[in-house]
Image (cartoon, rainbow, N blue to C red; front, side, top):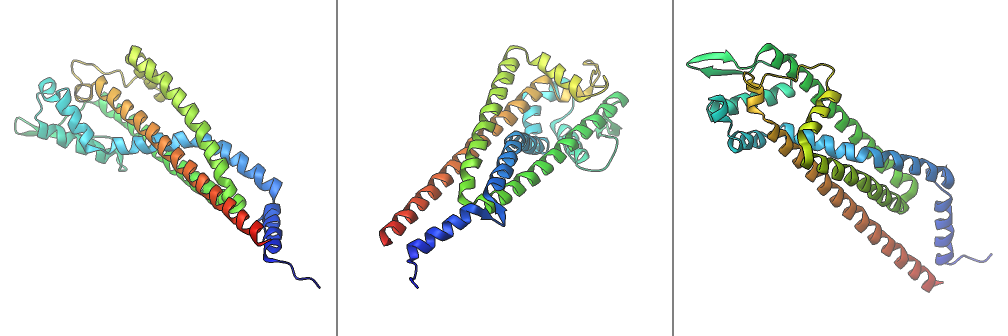
Length: 268
């Protein structure tokens, strides 16, 4: 019996791997990965944006910057220490199980509740929205992790090409949406801001009195414009980083595969 050379054995093994991985036929694996890649391309911007929202909501430096930049003390007659205390209470409220927000500050030596009933009810709705974003982040992160594990398990190095294409088209679609929203914000941010509230909330509790509302005075429209820009810029940077990483890995493993084939051909 003729013994096969190492090159032939490697070729045979490679063909076997091409036919199936984890016992799954190649054509089935390709369909599964392609379908998963489509969903991945859709949820990737949701993952990035929800992650950025979570980070921004809990960024004490952003609130401090807002209080200094606009300047809030002049509009509310609250000291910076009182504003910082209020911001800390709001951040804590977004992350606990309390139903209603009760921001308390010292005014004229007395501890008082800063917000009125309408503001408190609106903040309950805001908390529901933010915690919904938290859930989106968790579930999209879980899906992305499972997709990456399954993709590499089924397709091996070949999965990187699929991943790179999914990231590219996801980035193109997301950047296009960001560009449209960016133009809209530059032309008339107020109309976009109002539309966001009309879509996000089922009531008009967000329509507060600008002359009496501490909530509006503490967080003017400019604060939300700045926050939206931060979230969008971070998302673009995340797409660029992820795209460069997948492109680099794909090129690296493609080069390694070609080197292996050259060695195998030389041995043959």
